[in-house]
Image (cartoon, rainbow, N blue to C red; front, side, top):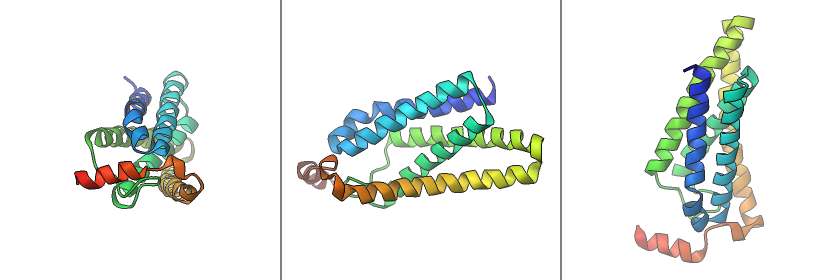
Length: 171
């Protein structure tokens, strides 16, 4: 199987995992359910497009978006998750999803590098990879910041006091 198809499978698997966890997270905080629905659908759509019509531009989009989701996940393990009650726990679905996204991002980086290096040279390809990784980092941090800023504007999308109390008694 080609590398582009592996990337599509890895990102598609991450999308499926995002959709599987929607009900659990929706019950915790509707904003989380909405976010995972959007992320899952977007990843599956990207995977279908990448499977059918692979392109360097699509690889770049996939690399940045998968990287941004990995960064966002990492940030929310240490800092309070937007619309939540604190940092999120590390769980099996989350780890599997991030491994899948990470593998997809690595394959996509290799594909982007190969495509650009053959056209413009290795130095240009390395610069582009650096920019894409920086864009992924910025995208994850920006998503976190925007969501934190939106919390006071849409408090009904956050964790309810009842859910918060329940979690406090569990831990």
